[in-house]
Length: 90
Image (cartoon, rainbow, N blue to C red; front, side):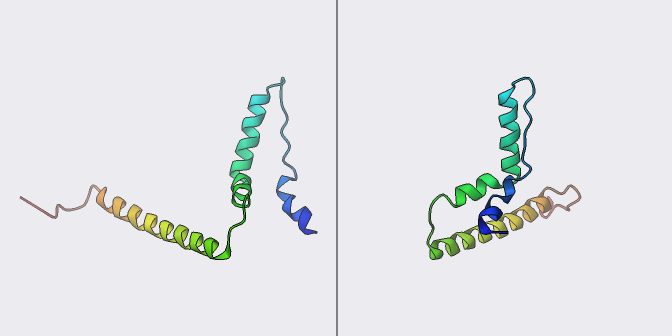
């Protein structure tokens, strides 16, 4: 398969049937399909050129954010447990 076909492969079999000329409902379905397929994210990412050093920096920031979020969710889960003993008894 050529690269052009591979770029547009995401759009294959993405057909929406509109019933009773309800275009708004059809657009909602199309937008949901694009969001779930991460098509809009890919389009937004490739909208403008990013230098390789900026791209590496972005990847590092996203990785750090993901690691921080995982750690914070573990801390919050620990603090929200009901069976935890009181660390400061009166």
